[in-house]
Image 1 (spheres, one colour):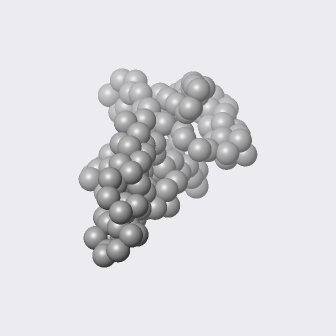
Image 2 (cartoon, rainbow, N blue to C red):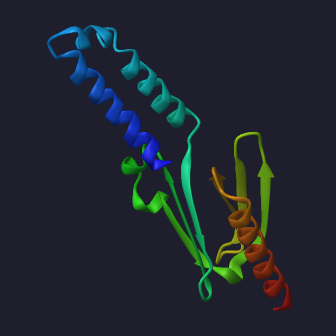
Length: 146
């Protein structure tokens, strides 16, 4: 989906560039409909908070990367990358909505508190979603044996 944002930004520049050309071609782009359409698309992606999601469960650590497609470059790395030991995972839940799924992880802290982490899952294929669910289920099963 990152290509979509880049394409929409490119269309804005193309629209303004073509409107500055001399001749009849510029009259087609004088009202900047293409730029307005692209701006609305970018705004829609920003409002709906479309984001990138990556999950890895190597060794004893779970790595989750999440980044907004539109404002991802403004986010600090602290808010984009989460990693924690598998042993502190106590529960997970996937809420299925119309446009997105939401993953909620419950982890225990060193002081015994429970902390919730929420992740939006956009455009995650069923295979990848099944991988995430199976992995988290396996981690919880292993944790219950300890």
